[in-house]
Length: 445
Image (cartoon, rainbow, N blue to C red; front, side, top):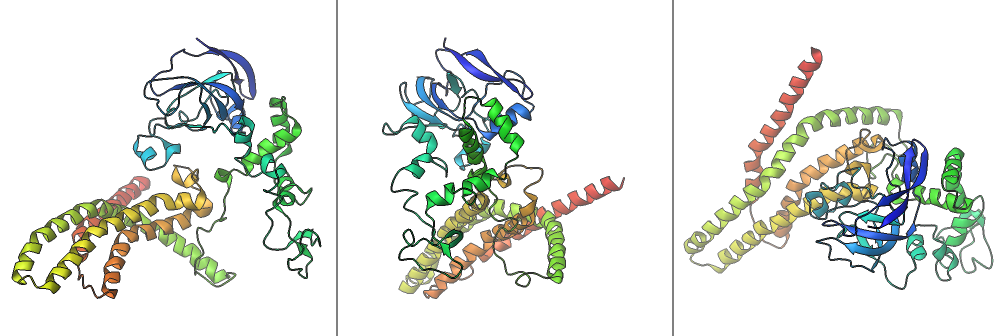
């Protein structure tokens, strides 16, 4: 039984090294990893200082190592393989994993989906089949860890990377340089075209220094005291790396998309109108969202019945039409149009499932329950949900219209979808209104 010398949380704000035993034979779906490189993440600081996790929790959730042993069901790696582990583990088979939302795996619910123990000689990985990746032999452990962020020393110090790529537009903070910027337009404000290395490293104006200036100095001090084995530059890079991580960025500052509401630059009436529309949007969503959810559930069933009816009708239509070629072609086009409607439903569902992640990143708070729901974007998200709900009707309808451009008169084949789902939509909306009435009466008492 291997024993691991591991960093563990001993109390609020304190850690220490402790011995943790691990089994020789991992359990089903598990892998035992011998650590060769580990990192200190900003989340480790939160775990030690703020999160109510009990003493004895092994620290570390980002590591590179060598597989020592695997349990039953793990076929993607074998003993001796060099691997990098994900900070979040997943099963790969639950509904959320199959939809691509591995961070909210239903088998390993948070905080159980966080890898623990990577800051030790050994650690155990659950869901090993889908929570690790092999490392090419040509890359060292340090390089694998280094190239995954914007301030990578490999990109900074290796010719052909950051010394080659440059700004496409002039930057006032970097004056025009006749040698560096030869052949590029010299503008009136004197701005030059820094390469990526200058853009990142230049003192004062470089992005690294500007990010560091936004960090609370006490956080850097605590980090340096806890991670005494790191130099100050390494501590600074670790903190900047956490700040610059895509999951921590808010790109739109309150605007999900560019809209045409209000005047350019905005005005007081625009602000009042937008506030009123947000209130109306909130109230309207209480009835609209349940109604459209019922419609989305009913559409596949209705479409299946329409397909059945079409298949039954085609032979009769051909007989009554005396197998006229025009009737045959029209029937074929209508059949294709109806069956292809499935594609538009799946496209609408895929966009609806992934568009917020595309806007905010895969670790967006919008993809999970968050008490604040990213309030700077809440109304934009709500409007987006209105639009996405209607796409289940609009996209198939546009498809039928597009067929008519080629002279194919598919007729009102999708009218049945809207007609058949109408009662279900009304019932769903009524259910929401009843719930709102009951809630209102409960609050009144």
